[in-house]
Length: 213
Image (cartoon, rainbow, N blue to C red; front, side):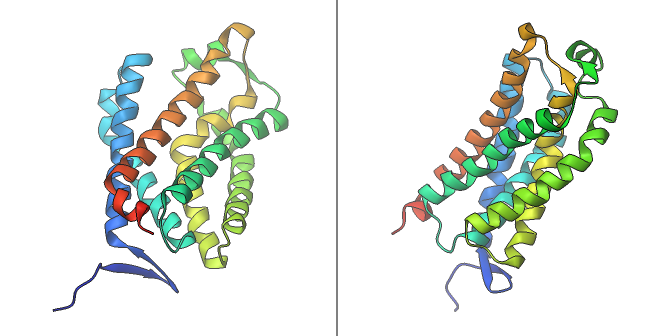
């Protein structure tokens, strides 16, 4: 009888199926955590829970898939660094949006519309696309990945931008009065909470793997 952990191959790189499952579970948990925080902090969004759980699962799966390709052996240090880098990309995206765009609407108009207007997301999309490609390349190079790893990193970056980054990409298109800057803090606070729940749940479930010498 063959003993061992089943793996999925990507070229010369393998990622354990167990880690992929754990990443998916952690991503789903982060979506539930986001819903709870949003309900306590802003408003209830339970009607969107299933959709957000699917989005969280996809984000969690893609992140651990890319992490498994870039790091031969998982560790807590590299896991936290990996998550921190992707978290930092959202801050860079916000800065890029402010640099590239001039405001074309007000925060009051966006709030009246219930969130970023589709036209704003479409206007920011070319910049978001270029940013995602460059960011994926830099992340791949920083962690010593190959061209095939760049493809995986680009997919992960695109998934994260689709579910978390589109609102951030429009910040430069919105005029924020000094009294409403807390809204920007709320956006980043929620993204930070999502990442912290995801990274913590995964680390808790896989602590033996991450702590192994």
